[in-house]
Image (cartoon, rainbow, N blue to C red; front, side):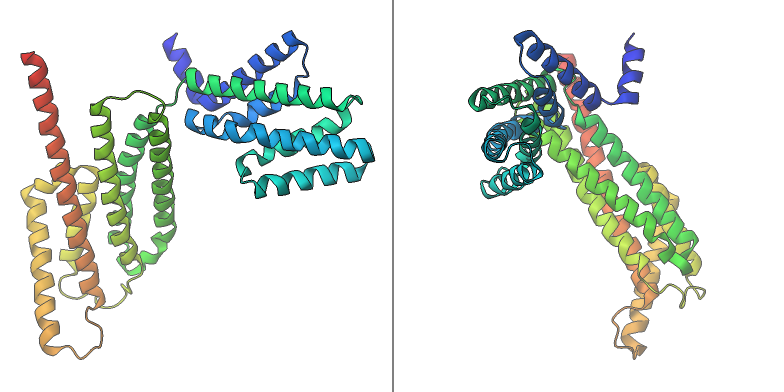
Length: 353
């Protein structure tokens, strides 16, 4: 049964299921009370947000926005009846009023309320106005309650999985750059895709922070969350260095002495992205040492005989970026080792208790 739930949740999506449930409960309540269903269901559908925090904050904005839309609809319907001007003026002035009053997140609900009320008004404008606001309030309350209590979102597993995937993607990108170094700019689309994934992960981070404002959480969860944030900071540095490598003119001077050293060190760093423990292997350390030695040799040559106005040639830039990537991986390895020690201490303390 649990496997079936997980498969259904993965196939459909939690937010979609909650939206359907909110629409059903809202329609059932309105039908039981003899109230119009349409406005309530529309409000319930658009009020289900990624987090319960967003539903609460935006629901507070959407109710007065809906009142504005309903008010304009009643005013123009009473003067112009159901004409094209009624729809246009009600929608336009609703948008303007919501924007001026900083109710932007309620614009959609307000505008839908305004245009949907016009053909359904019976002539008793005050009664229609109260009914529409009542059904809108029911939709907001139901969708907020469903979003909070039913299938509460768990962003941390998604964030952790995304971070691991980003490190693998960064390793794959570096491997492609190393294997096709003279044409590294071809990997620009891959770099942009990884950058978009990083932005999406930061969005999930924001969602998790908002959820914790309304839900209890342990210190262990906060600590694990801070570690993931640190890993994301390292990822930003990694993407920065990879981006610099994409825009170096790698067609010059890379078939000369030291080319194999650069390629081997770069591929070794790429493997370390997939498995940070590879970074402590003697083979990897030897390749990094050779790369560092090559950098200093080129630097000594540059300072004594270079006539170029550039401080670094293309080969030195690539080497510098690779060494910088390895430094970031050193920091990542130390962070993970620290977490392993903390985890082992926690298990030991629990065993003693």
